[in-house]
Length: 383
Image (cartoon, rainbow, N blue to C red; front, side, top):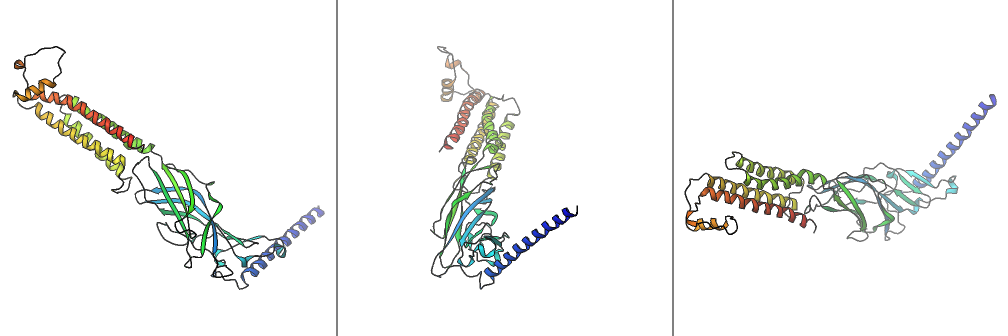
């Protein structure tokens, strides 16, 4: 028993000595690197005329939200930034095999990589990030600041809700001397930790040089909206109402709900137009095809309501008999059996006959119009 206790104490003693030696080696390495006239305000280049190369890679943690009304893309993600600092090199053999070390970002020179498409505040990316910096013995430094990126992105809602958006997240090496260049890493984009969004699908992310070659680099997000919600909530009710609207001409004139039926459907289109317009930007170019479709069926519904009022007025007008030209026009369009002969002089035509005939004509015409609007809407979405 005594031997076991002695053995345990000996093991703890050895571990304690090893840990203390490692701490001493890290402290010695830290002091040698940063207490030997190292200045974090100076760019780590041996010659002030040389260019500084910064390698960046973007890792995407997921799309948070796309505000198409205000034109803001919100993405959780960050950059893996690396560069070379010749003054922060050491031989691992001199420090008990230590090949890398984590330090605070305040003691090391940092590149001013700025998000140029920031929708809130223009500042160096990761300015508020508290993550430490990794320094390797060969002088290469790695920093992975992460944040919620709110980038400006103008929405193209022409095909809403079947729209696809292309948003660019542009980074720039903010250097007044224009001698700090950005270049992509071997794997410039990583979506391994990306979380799927319920309303948007990320089709692709393209990394490429910005317009200012060397100093800028951008990551272009191509996202596609899931249209099911808007199809069920907006398009399907509008399409059904547009097909129900012409049925007003089949209701009997004696039915007191004939005018109320048409006006109710007309007001329903206004509600769906308001619902759709709240979800898209208030812009004149481009205008959403869905908004145009709702406006067209709304105008058609207004015309149907007007014709319905005229027909009701004609139906209850006095039994004044029409003669001459109007009588002949009505008889021509009146359906008769084949080879049936009927004396024109004995045929009586009044306003009630006109109203009934107009009901049939308007019913067919309005159905053709509504079906045409729906067909054209689906055709234009293909282009």
